[in-house]
Amino acid sequence: MLYAERDKDGKIIAVRHTADEKATEPVSGINEELMEFFKKINKDPWTEMLSASDLGVIRVVEDLIDLLIRKNIILFTELPPEAQRKIKTRKQIRRKIDDHNFMVDDII
Image (tube, rainbow, N blue to C red; front, side, top):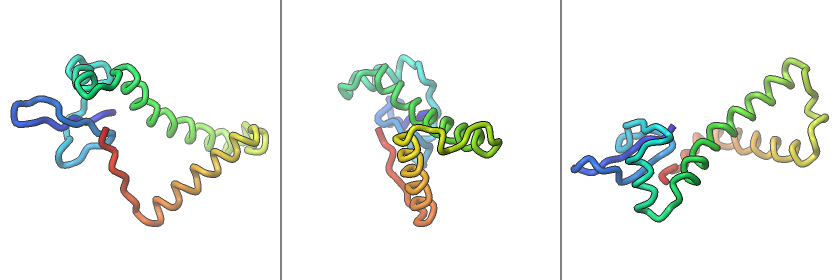
């Protein structure tokens, strides 16, 4: 989900992955106004929309892998070594973020 920040005239001036005090309005993935905003900032709107959805899908895949492992449907060691490495790295990063309550600015 994306959240729009608007100017005093109601035009989208920024888009974020999470809502905050400036960007409170959820905007749908395929939205003509959002597409125009991406074009205005010289970004391909379809690529931006796909990238925005990728962030959510990545978390779903991580959760799905964890669930399959917990239910003993797959073993972590059955995954390719490169996949194991990437998953371990993401888990370490998530732990660091949780430990430090680290906030990342997600403005597009």
